[in-house]
Image 1 (spheres, one colour):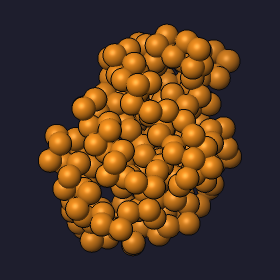
Image 2 (cartoon, rainbow, N blue to C red):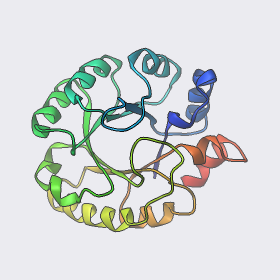
Image 3 (cartoon, helix red, strand yellow):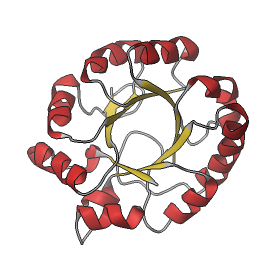
Image 4 (cartoon, rainbow, N blue to C red):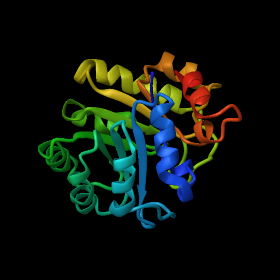
Length: 213
């Protein structure tokens, strides 16, 4: 299981310190939530802050776009050379074109599905992406309760992936903890995003990441 702590739960007054802490604590990716205040009712960070995150991180960035103008934001963040850029299928009119653009920039493309969006909706895009991110909360805010139906959804997605693109990863984001990660692993999930569980764990960041792994 790969762990991608979300910096949305970090202390932004000490952001470099908190990014370094998850990297030293054994994370695999640094998950960066970019929200524009339009696609979701929250506004987070732009390229100036993410550039600072990239400088502090010793692990690759996993940039999750929750925005309306995906192409604009891909161009904005591509110079930082993240490992992944993921976009929401609910917002993109030309997903195949955007996938090709992301890959042409040397970045691995990923698609995100909101809790209500069925995995079958991207069946004919699976051959072209490297990861699918399943939201297990409604996007926009950290600290929400895990939506348990994502477990069955991950199983259905895994079945499609095995037919279409076995190398494609499944990532889950929202309310992940040591209480539900075993269900996610059994469902075929490869990567988990965890914010509150990692940054607010009573025994510290490394203990939290070890617990998920």
